[in-house]
Length: 284
Image 1: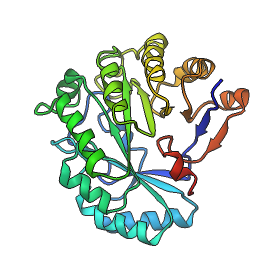
Image 2: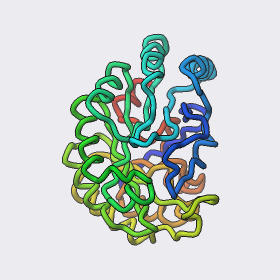
Image 3: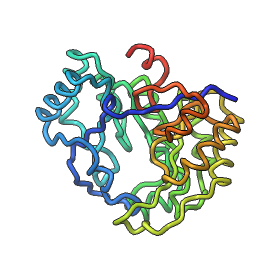
Image 4: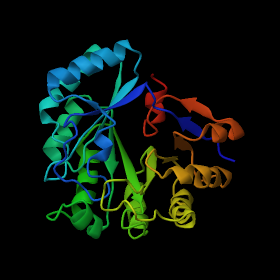
């Protein structure tokens, strides 16, 4: 059995929305519901003051997120000088859920000393155009953005591949895995579609365990780096799929697992996001 680490962000790695509860895209599978559970910082000053408070409270890192604009990215530009100040003044990790990025934005993220970009690599055009409401974008834009971030962005670009976003079906996940692996990422994170109340997809069934295992097993067979099961997954998967993935030796990291799973396998616990590369973990 592979050695597996449990990642528990808890109070040590906080998510901050810089758009409050607002999102322009309002994807059918989210509708901004997940922004409500994040800390809010609607101005650069609010962001700096919040991070300063979190550092003093013992935080090890922050994930900057929020709603995306019509071009499919987080409107983070006004915050970049403050992020650089934070990195210069405090010993804290900063990761960003950025969305699509061009060369200019990627370079600015690097200059601002962002540590990690969490990048959702989605190659299903139906999902992109009809569920994410990015009618002017395609899978090619997601691939180009991934390559641009790798070439011009921060040192660590961690691909996140959602499984089952096309109404619970596995469609382009294998292609997404191949694209991600072509650049040999330190960590690859899998997410699983989670039906969410208050969205048009609230009653959609998530992909079955066998389908998820097929995607992750394929990736494991072609990748020697670390595979993580991220925090976005249905609760019921924690009682079935989580155990299967560990028993089969398919993952190296798991986010927010059940206490019974941690106890059964004697998992080491780290109070960070599961996408943080080992080099950065060792520095905290």
